[in-house]
Length: 202
Image (cartoon, rainbow, N blue to C red; front, side, top):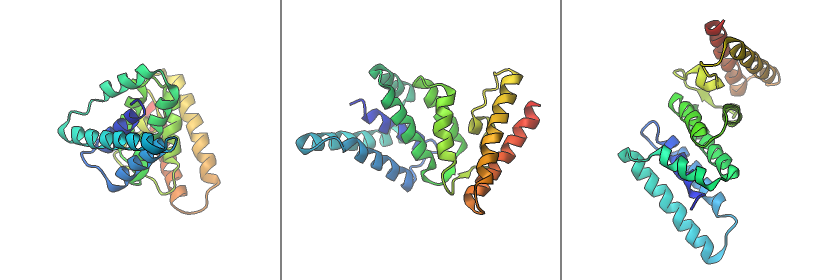
């Protein structure tokens, strides 16, 4: 079933560091429950079995190194359903933020998934931004600033500078509306990372 592809793609994100964190597993299970909500009776039971099977299979395949994103993305693309693609990326973002840490491998993987399912960088960036603004989320110190802010090093200098200015305005405005606490600290960290990028790209 096409909808269960998002569960398998999300599992790839959850297992990108080699482990399935408890909260990541819960995020995937909650997504499965959402998928079941339109169904009832025997149809709901059938769908539940399919979702559970998709979760178990993808977890086992990820552990074995045989969970192939390209194949999953190709199957999702064949549905031609933009809503399913958005739901898949939303679930992947939920998984990324579930353990409270934006891991660099997960950030890079979200960009890769967005590319594989035919979403442009700005669409992917909006999903990631929503996750990064989540209360208490920590940006891993090893995170690549380009991945965090959706900067493509192949852009020309003018485009990169305009993009960074827009990002700075957004995060600076957000920080000014926050009281002391983890959200404000996170916004400040984002501004600091933007400063690093501005130095790098002039």
